[in-house]
Image (cartoon, rainbow, N blue to C red; front, side, top):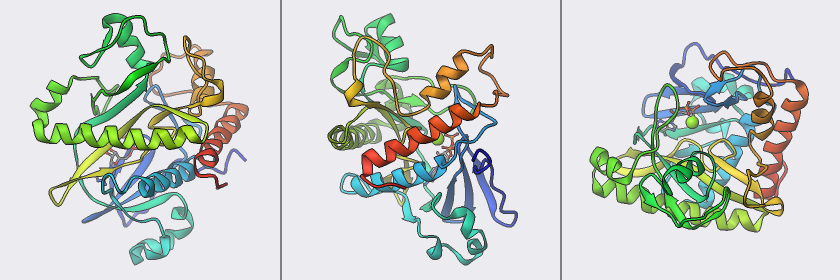
Length: 296
Ligand SMILES: Nc1ncnc2c1ncn2[C@@H]1O[C@H](COP(=O)(O)OP(=O)(O)O)[C@@H](O)[C@H]1O
Ligand SMILES: [Mg+2]
């Protein structure tokens, strides 16, 4: 079971565009091939152990959301049907099937567009220090995991190395201009509102999420992955108890396990035990099934 993971791809004659923490991206001139591996990163460190079926879940959940949100904003998807990929990729069909997408190559906008509907993670930390997040003033007396009066746009920089840094809307406006910034904010809020209402009806609270956008033929399009357990905090609605950290559908088991180790959270990370791997794999699959109503 544990060896049924794909942690790295290598297609020698296809130019590598970028190896991210989770995805291997290949350059096809005006298009990209995005391959979601089974790698998992935690505290920004890629771990040596893969999670079975994770790449498949990320790919198929993103596909689901690309379809569900296409009335709000165009996205980078061309096709995920391997038979329609460029011929030079066909010999890798068995590896690519179910875990890859052919997408439009965009110019990535260098800001992570984070929307928070609930107070958690770095937002909760910031709130405790300043009663605000990214310069947005919030009401006093909120508890950890409380629902915010309304969802807020809390952008961060996209750092290639190390952790992303929360920034104010003013900061983004100086970098990108007022027009693009207001579009990013409007689109991100609209995406979150539509998706979170849907997810809630399926028993999942989307506490927060991160979108990436790019410019393609002078238009803003949605790129990367969308509304997956890697880019979002998914909480089971039935177990929601504000005033504490929530159990979640993502890397909770992995984080909890890593916290029991003596490890300084820098690379190389430790191997994960089989039990943690299997439980994590199950959580990813469960999130997919709850949201789409289908088994993978
Ligand atoms: N359509 C696209 N055009 C250009 N770059 C993209 C597109 N979609 C995704 N990317 C980039 O590909 C990479 C995906 O790999 P990932 O493992 O998520 O990397 P990271 O470690 O930066 O999170 C990201 O850097 C993302 O910005
Ligand atoms: Mg990423």
